[in-house]
Length: 382
Image 1 (tube, helix red, strand yellow):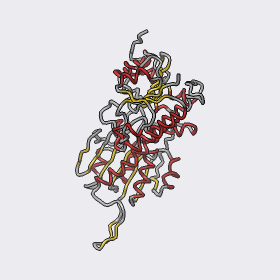
Image 2 (cartoon, helix red, strand yellow):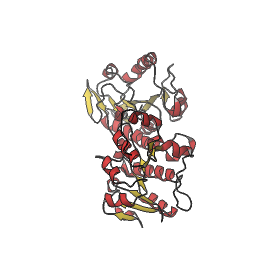
Image 3 (cartoon, rainbow, N blue to C red):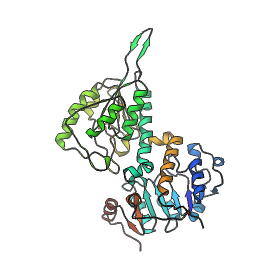
Image 4 (cartoon, rainbow, N blue to C red):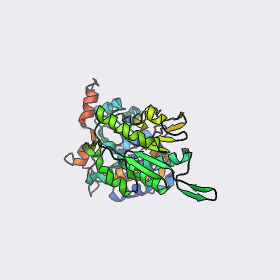
């Protein structure tokens, strides 16, 4: 009997992205697997049921969970959803283990294999499966549009009968995927763009997009493509240098986020207060508390005439393309687990599968998560 890949509706409030789109559903069918989705699953991303050809539509989540071998999601499964899953089911999606310890423990105890998209190794072979990067690209693009909308100035230079208007000055802090997309988008809109990252290796990428790299002596390359945490002295040097550039910017976009940890505070209250009235800070690291000391996640505030916008779940605001990209990430990851005969082969010797696995066969496989959860006396139900 073919394995069943199933996709329920997202139950998290405000989540409009979906884990399956019509094109990817058709590709799964070509692999020989059974595809099932809950009725109306993709409507939040503007994909009505009739666009999904020759797949089974479940009338309820309960029906879907009882037939599913592999469940695809965007947001972490809730405890109520986990309760409906069969033992041995494979669940794939963002898991946010640090925010959902009880759900992770429940998956462990039900012997559900969970693969966390945020744990996909950031190696060349796994680039097509890197959902953190695909969704960060959406966030970086959208952040610039938010900044342009809230800004009190034009982004491009304009020559008018009333004179020439100089372009806006935009500073992007963090030159990861989101930051680079923000740089490219701000440049397309005609702004003068500067960018800073503690990883000196990003200078070439920043300059290739037409932005000016903010140079300083602080270097903080870390493991896995992330920056290491700065020392107190390095933070002081960083802030002094950045303060000059922030004060001259019309729009500052901050993107410095570390999965599973609080976002580093880069913009102090004093630095924000030194900005000109009418300036804007777009803090897309708000999920982790934000990069600005004044940030209130999920809110837009004004402090001394400076707007600080801290949106949550930005990719969900562009659900069509965000869903298409995410669904393709999932498909590529499952391609490592489904062989040419449509049989399931969960190869724990594969670096990508092993690195992505959070729970398997009654155990938490991701060591930091295991220590955090089992160290807090979460009891297994044997």
